[in-house]
Amino acid sequence: MMFYTDNITEKVGYDFYCDIAINIVNRRKELGMTQEDLANKTGIKLNRLKRLENVQLRIRLPEIEVLAKALDVTVNNLINEGYDSQVGNCLYLVYIEGHEDLKLYQEAENKRMAFLKMEQHLNNQGLTWFGTPRTRVIVKLVGVPKTKQELQDILPKFKEEQEIEK
Image 1 (spheres, one colour):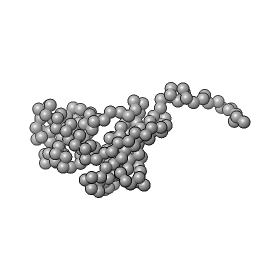
Image 2 (cartoon, helix red, strand yellow):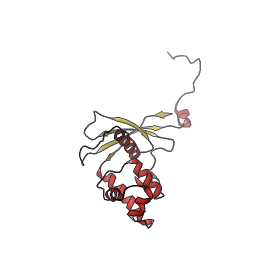
Image 3 (cartoon, one colour):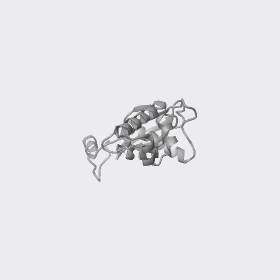
Image 4 (cartoon, one colour):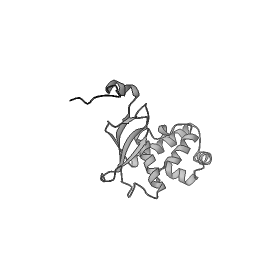
């Protein structure tokens, strides 16, 4: 059951991709892998991997998933994100900074994953958030799931023949 209550916001832009690249490079080096080793293990072309590590290209969710598996870490580890709720997925508004007229909803476990999932959805339709390298996307947490116990603590018990109070 989902009830929408919170207002936590994150801006996603160039620095987001820098963070991911740093995490990939650091983990690859921890494992003693070369770029060529990682490219072979993931099936990502070596030239693309080099450009991702140098933040010359935007990394996509499927690539992050493949890299996480090859580097033996979680996707959340690569994107520097935890969980916004231990109960389940949250609901987020995702939109381009300065374009509040186009807000899209995405369910995910955290803000950065909400961004990546929405970006993947747009890319699958031949669209992108990014008109320029300076574009930033806003991700706003708007709903956090509540446990059954939390609801029981707040709401009155249901009665089949409950009368309307006058």
